[in-house]
Every structure is written in C-alpha cells, then in structure tokens.
Length: 84
Image (cartoon, rainbow, N blue to C red):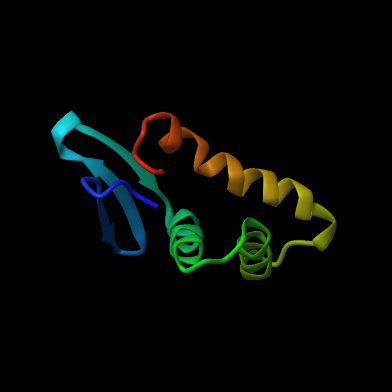
C-alpha cells in the first residue's frame, strides 16, 4: 500500500506516512490507523467501514457515508504519491 520508500511510523495508536526523500508526510489518527492495518491485511473498504461503525456505536443507516469517508481518507496520500 505505501510505496517501498515511504515509512509508516505508528506512535500511541496514531500514525504517519513519511517520505523522507521529499520531506513529506501524512498523519493518520487512531481510526485512520485501524483502516490502514485492515486495508493492508486485505479487508475491503466496506469491511473497514463496518468495523469503524461498530467501534463508534454508529447506526448502519450511516454506512454509505462512512464508506465514502474511508475512501476519502486515502485519496489525499494517493494524490501525494505516498501510497499506491
């Protein structure tokens, strides 16, 4: 998921995608790191959304919104070429 030269640093449940050569980073909060680990493990965006909704006690009626949020969460690092 991250380019081979991009480091993923996790501290206290939060994380940073860090490209030292370009002095660029992208921060992920605790929920972002849950999504990161699940996606790296082969989970679908829908599975990630379901896990986050369960963890936050959200109503399933909001599922489409959460799925869109998970997708959006990784659009910015993709535009920055931090992930593939």
